[in-house]
Length: 257
Image: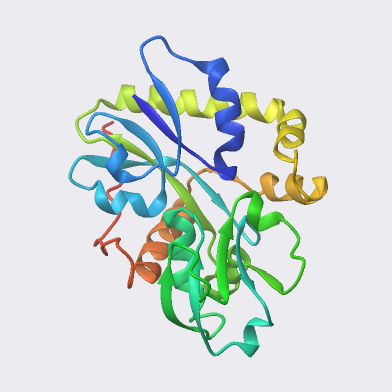
């Protein structure tokens, strides 16, 4: 089975996957996909930090993943300018593991804001909220919105790798290549439909079409050496205080010649 995390970053891919189905491979698209949802024989396009809980059963394809640089769809919302906040309770409002670790890696190191608590359910005490996807692109009615992908890029000069392609440890290289090619062809098919896709995403949203188009145009699907280093950097800088363990390295798959 191939399981794909539903997210704005995977929107082209999930839009096109129906046209690239394989009779020998079940494909499932799941909201908020977590490591616990993935079986040992499943292929999965997962939020980057989830790999830390899969290292016994899975490796990571070093060629395919999703990343963006300089701007993205993960944001920090605050009622006042960030430089006016010394400390705050921070709400992770239904966000992915990648968004959580990006926030942990930037809120203090980049903005100088000390997190007194990290909470996942609104309780009225949080003055900062982390949002992602279309929510991050919505204009704020009051207060300030900070692009955390941009903050990370300024801080580290690295892109943000939001998704990795996890593959079962015992699967053949031919099988990995087959599923990777399915993902690529699905993304290409979705890109052809990009105008209709953006129109559907904008329904009931107060987002400028140009902003959505610009953000989605930044999503890249090929991992190079810089992106692979950036994927580990996000883990190393962001796991502190989270439920994700620090691993020595990402288990990149080495393909036999």
